[in-house]
Length: 300
Image 1 (cartoon, helix red, strand yellow):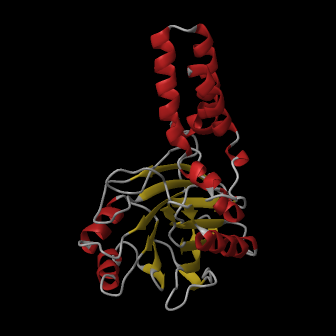
Image 2: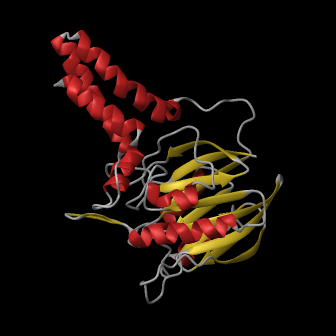
Image 3: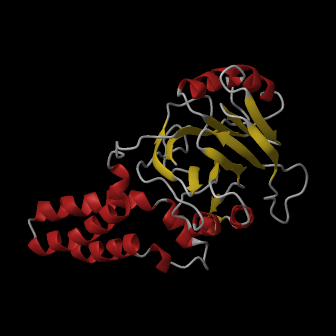
């Protein structure tokens, strides 16, 4: 039983792309929660040790190796040489956040150079502006997304990532150029559409289309250095984000599960880069949001 379960588990970890998306987007659903297959591996290892079966132990080494290859490096400490040139914070602050001022203070207290926020509603926006103004004098807001910066921002404007079929007010993409001491960086802040897990599977067509549009915008970006921050409503392993993630570097260290805040199951809040290295990413303490903030160190 253990050996028979270990082999397919190893296969899912090593080749998640082999699971098709044609029925209920099962492949994307698997990729979203892929790290949690580690619990299955631990359970199989425990059963193999309990039974003292050499065959079972050898078989369990397959999923152990596959999980370690895929996720083990994320658990290692970030290399100390070089350090971080920029520190950024990404947070979906929630349109129902009861304490926007406290949330703003907590994010600023992490000492980042850039803060990207989503779900900025009109009643809370002035609160964030006042709370962040002293330490982050430069800001750009587009619809419900915003960017606060220690460094000057130019060329701020919208990025159209609205999927077909969404009507009404929907402005959730922003681009601005950040003038850092290390040169100019094109920064994108985005909030992709939510997905739903239903009896029929994962409903993600709008999210996937929005990811494609954002990927096309990044691909057309004329500046070499690009930073993408946002609530992308999926993990970097999900093939639904491939049109975007294929163009960017993801974090070298850190799992940083960010949602839901009460019991984080996945990191759907992302920091990715082009021509830069996301050295590390970590989750920050909970705020009044249903997401945890994430902080990332960037090396240029």
